[in-house]
Image (cartoon, rainbow, N blue to C red; front, top):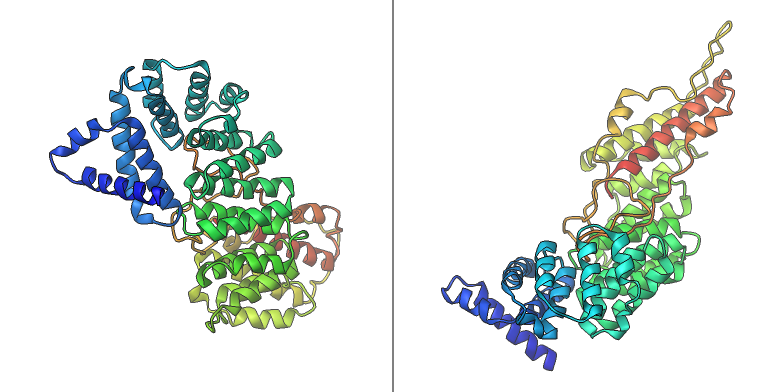
Length: 456
């Protein structure tokens, strides 16, 4: 009840400040920095819960808080709550110039100044210096609001070099600040780190908690990227039943998109069972609304069997796909799959009469396939319908620290199959059958590359 009453009062205050009345400037100046920062946190928590309409209010509050902190003097920072608010503001996506200038005017104890130095280093892209400044500080000994943010920052900084320590810190962030944007970010980062650690149990637990609480967060596209990569990387350790349990908590459209993405990745990586399972779940739908005939599901389920003994069935299935319902990238994949299927059933060419030159192990790709490798090949919407945080490049195992503590963190690396060129290197390509198989494998490898370069 107390928190609800506080939230109501803060929201009323924000509505006043968001108006264009002449009293706005006076009301803003009358507020203490800690009051503005607390209002910012309340708005961010609403955003984490899925209230995207609150995002403009967040931008306005950041602007107002920045102005108030730039105007704050040493007298303001005699109140410890205002100094803590300054640090929380910095770790909430605030202006590093404002934070550094305000700290220079404040008199505080050595521990708070060490935290301030670490925060400023973090905001300015100096992760090594930030780690050294923050290393001796235990977030659990600080007031809850500051401790939660500090645990999140330290966990983010240590994610690459000390993943086990990072997971412990992220657990502390969740414990200190449940139901907030801090917990959302900590869960999201925990999913990615668990993948790099090969910890299927933690991956499943963090994914379940995220879907239960924060599926509609505007940052959920980062979770979706890590979740799909994790399912692929940990497919031997995560049962299909567990995967179905997690996705059953999603709404039908998000569940379908997730399974389509898993099917696509699994098909290219040669995980036939997982690809077939994910394709079937994508087609199955829920509440009597099936997705049978979705051309993407048909295409992805065919990719892993394109050189199988049932090639004629696969060719028939590929021929029934409605090209008009595919993205440009998936049309390129369809063309490549049909070309491969045709070559598998084609008779081998006759041997040349005399002294042929050795065939190139990896000749240049056909024009249509080479062009396709630069297209936007995914064609799948982000799970939450918001702009993805990740650039359209393959996932990497580690990313540099971002100034905003809620920005994307580390993600599981996309593991692609071994290059067909390595397989082909040992083949005797003077034999027509071997040459045909080398060419087929090369084209499969090009599909792998197209998928790897596609946005998720």
